[in-house]
Image 1 (cartoon, rainbow, N blue to C red):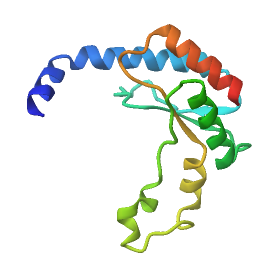
Image 2 (image 1 turned 90 degrees about the vertical axis):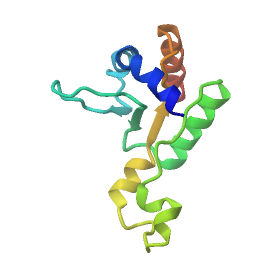
Image 3 (image 1 turned 30 degrees about the vertical axis):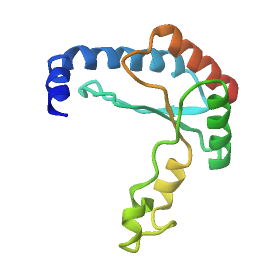
Length: 137
């Protein structure tokens, strides 16, 4: 509600700073992983980091990605695919959108993994996520 939003706005700089730190931990630990692609962020860009998504290399299929997600979840790591392309979301089906219309978008989406990402993650949490993620690749 509005009251919660007002309180959060007072903490916005702190929240953004904390999320940027968590993102840096992930980026530092995953930058040498050849089996994934990290989002490129130009030096002039200030990210809000509402989610941390990696894309598996072209060697992986959607089934491979789904198996990786299941292994991560079995290890107690909350993760998800991110996200279903907009044209495949139920609302757009009513407008005639269908699978196959945007094959590049669909191929990229089939290989995305959203890793745990929130203000409460500490460095050891990120270390555990990264180690488990690498082991599942």
